[in-house]
Amino acid sequence: MSRAVATTRRLSRDADGRPAAPVRLVHLGVGNFFRAHQAWYTEHSDDAADWGIAAFTGHSRRTADELAGQDCLYTLLVRHQSESVPEVIGAISAVHVGSDLANLRGHLAAPAVAVVTLTVTEAGYFRDESGGLDTEAPAVRNDVAALRSGSPEELDTVPGRLVTGLDARRASAAGPLAVVSCDNVPHNGAMARRVVTDLAREVDPDLAVWIDANVSFVTTMVDRITPRTTDEDAADTRALTGVDDPALVVTEPFTEWVLAGDFPSGRPAWETAGARFVTDVRPFETRKLWLLNGAHSIMAYAGSIVGHETVADAVLDPEVFGWVEDWWDCASRYLTLPAEEVTAYRQALFDRFANPNIRHLLAQIAADGSQKVPIRALPVLRAARADGELPSGTTRFVAAWIAHLRGHGVPVHDVEGERLADMAAGTVREGVAAVLEWLSVDDLEVSAMVEQQVADLEARSRER
Image (tube, rainbow, N blue to C red; front, side, top):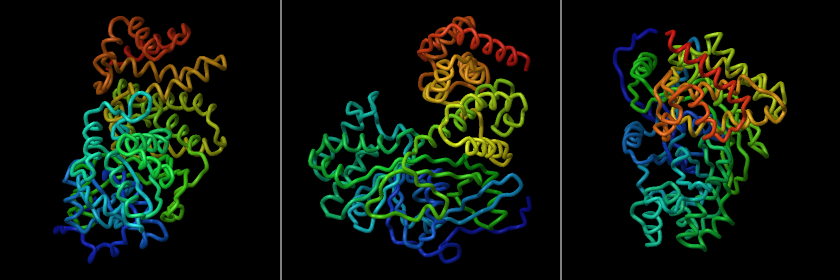
C-alpha cells in the first residue's frame, strides 16, 4: 500500500464533515461497534441532516476527549478483501463522558430527543439469574440510594443513568421516546425494559408507571465485525487520507440491523441505509446466533487446536471449514427463515470470514465459552436428538470446547474458567462426563461421540 502522504492533520468539520445535525438521538456506550454500526446507519440515512447523536462514554474519558478534539468526527476504515476504503462519519453531534449526568438529563429532557440507543454489553445491565435487576449488586445499591436522594451527582450503572434521564424527561413533560438496545443479547428490548423498570420501581413506583406508559423498548439484532484498531490500521489511514485520527474505527463491508418495536416520537430513516424493520426479531437472532456465532466458536476452539490464529486462516483450511459446514447443515434445519435466505447468509458468512484484511483473532472469540456454548450449541443438539439424530457437527462443537478447557488451542479466558478446567481434567472420559453433566446433557450416545472427538482433537494438537 502506498504511503506517499508525508504530513498529517486532525479531522475538522470545516475541512472534512457536514455541519453537526441537531441532537435528536442519545447513545450510551461509545465504542467501536456503535461507531461502525448505529452511527454509520444514521450517517447514511436519507434524513441524516435532521438526526444528530449526543454520545456518552462508559467510564473512560479517552474516547470523549479524542472525539471532542476533532469536532466529533472520526474515520471508519472499511477493510475489503482487496482494498481499504476510509470514510469520515459525522453523525455524532456532541460527546460526553458517561458520568456527565447534567448533560444526560438535559438531552433527555428535550422534546426533540426521540430515541436512546445502547451498546453497553450484557454485563452493563446488571441482571440477576432470573433476568431481573440484580438489586444486591453494590453498584445497583449505590445507584438506588443516590436516585432516592432526588438529584444524584454520580451513578455507576447504565440502568441508573437511564432512570435519572427518564425522570428528567417526565419532569419536563417532553413526551414519549424509544429505548433501543443494540447489545448482542437475545430479546435485548425485553431485557432493557425489565432492568430499567425494576430500578425505577425501587426508586419511585410512579416513575415506573410513567415509563411503562411513555417509553417503548425496541428489540434488535445487530451484526458487523469491528476488530481492535492496530498501529497498522492507523498507518494505512494516514497514508490514504493524510489524517492522524486517534478515534479511528476499523470494520468489514458487511453490516446488518434488524429491529422490531415502536418509535413513538419518530426515528431516522434507517431503512434507507439498509436497516430492516420486522414484527419479530427472533428468527434473525437465532440465525445469527447459530450460524455466525456458532461457526466462530467452532473455529476458535477446533481451529486453534489445529494451529490457526485468525478466522480467515481457519475458514480457508478445508478441514476446519468442513467442520463449520457440518455444524451449519445441522443448525440450518431448525431455522424458520426461508431456505434460500439461509443459503445466501451462509455464503455471505464464508466471504466475511475469508476476508484477510479483517484480523479477527480466534483467542478473542474463544473467551467466555461458558456463556456462549450452552446457548449456541445445545438448542441444536437437543432438537437433533429429539429427531433421533446424532449430529457430528454439533457434538464436535462441544468436543472442541472441552478440548480447549483441557488445555489445547488458545488459552482459556472465562469467568468460569478455573472451575471448568478442573472439571475437564483427568482422562478424556472423566472430563467429558463432568462437563456434559454441567451442561445438563445426559445422553450415552452423545457422550461416546464427544469422547471420540475430544480424543481425535487432542491427538491433532499433540501432532503439532
